[in-house]
Length: 182
Length: 116
Length: 164
Image (cartoon, rainbow over all chains, first blue to last red; front, side):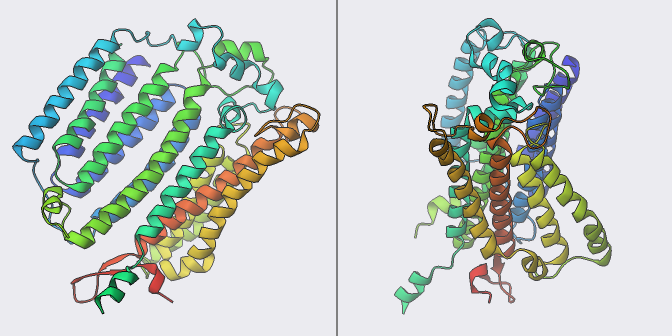
């Protein structure tokens, strides 16, 4: 299982590089879809079926939205990278961040020993042991999402609502500007 | 440990795309790749060796369930984050289409130059 | 996207959309027993409506679910979730009340592995499913109705609000 995970991660990295460096925008979007579906298989290998289900259906909707922005627009592909100064600043930032990440990465626990196994007062023990008696649900993830941590779900509902509201507000015709021109 | 290293490489592939590309759609794609790597990192941090999914089977007690399940907490957080990522991406595509209508191109260096 | 696609696509869409809708409702309702829940079920239901939008065109799809009704449904789903959270404060009066309390489970506990169980969780799944369905359908429908080039090929901007 570990080898399969490494293999799919390498596939995702190659698809990611292809998505970024492809000239044709439709190829880039399809490669991004490959990254998303590989991610869903990784979630299944890591014993997270709930998250894998949501990832697949959300990836399908993301592909629909991105293809709306690229197909049939009649635009020529914009190729190439940014100018030298912008890229140099960006590359320095990336190298700095990489150094910091590698400095922290040596303290990460081994794969297979999550935090809640070592700390016995972690909330995950409560979520696993008491989910049937306190909530009556047998899906621990759904019990955490809607009963133990319902406030976070309320915040997520508000964020989704605001995002769609902003999207609707951006797609109005500018009436006021036409009145100003007259 | 090699899994964490590969996830870090995926994160930096996306970050490189954010830094170096000119096309607005490529920026959105790179942001999505960065988000995917973060989701994978969180779920990997909650994985327990030889364990099963956090769904109770028929006839299992709570003690047995707690000994054989992976961490349900990062899974709930990542589920929320995936749906929020979808909402943000819908808003970003709307902004991109609006910018295309206003400036006629997806090139961010051109958009920065034409003002007003 | 005002007219639909070819006959083969329309026939297959007509056969398949019922199964997608049923699977979405199953994922939503059995969320507290098996993987799924409100978010996954809501997005699957939205995909059913988007399939009709793509295969049959905008005018037919809006006869099934108009985008204005979908905007109201979006707000109704969010309000339902909030009302469920406040009812926890209202009902448990003997000193155990807090925001988002699972009052149905505390007052009428159910049996494990049954459908009418786990109190507020299936109702929360339902509210979230309605909200996610309406949000994603409105986002995709509005983006599909946007016309950035008019008939002469010049750049215009026509969104859905002017179509009557």
